[in-house]
Amino acid sequence: MNFVLPKDKKLILFDGVCNLCNSSVQYVIKHDKKNLFMFTALQSEVGQEIIKVHNINTNKIDSILLYTPEKGINYKSTAALKIASHLGFPNNLMGVFFIIPTFIRNWVYDYIAKNRYKWYGKKEACMIPTPELKSKFLE
Image 1 (cartoon, rainbow, N blue to C red):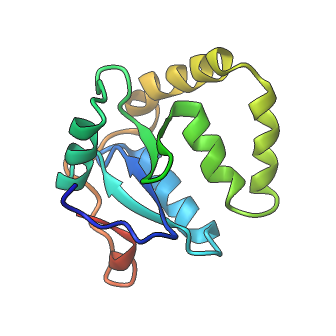
Image 2: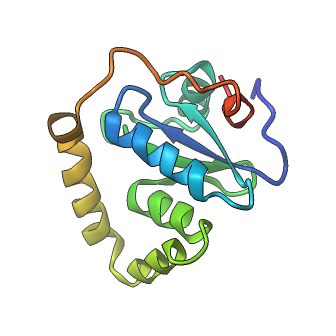
Image 3: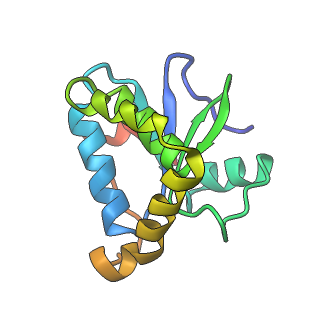
């Protein structure tokens, strides 16, 4: 791949025009005390490269992905719960939802993802990080 993710980082791919997704990214940035996560929009060059290399069907998965070079891609509710598990207390308590079967978790996730534009709105273009946050984003 044509980008370098530092060895100790995890990459969150998100829908750059989705208000809910952008709010979620801001939440993760605020609570990422270990500075573990980096971000890129699905619409970015890096996002498109990962989608292509991993043969991801964006008609089925179009909101949040968690990528690590060693472990590959996590999707939907699994990605969201793994992200939360790294955000410290009380966010890490969300890991308890791993006991729920994946098909049920993903049904809830898909319902929210399907309605996210209707409920939270959509931007015309991807979020542009502030200069202070620019180092957390791959473009």
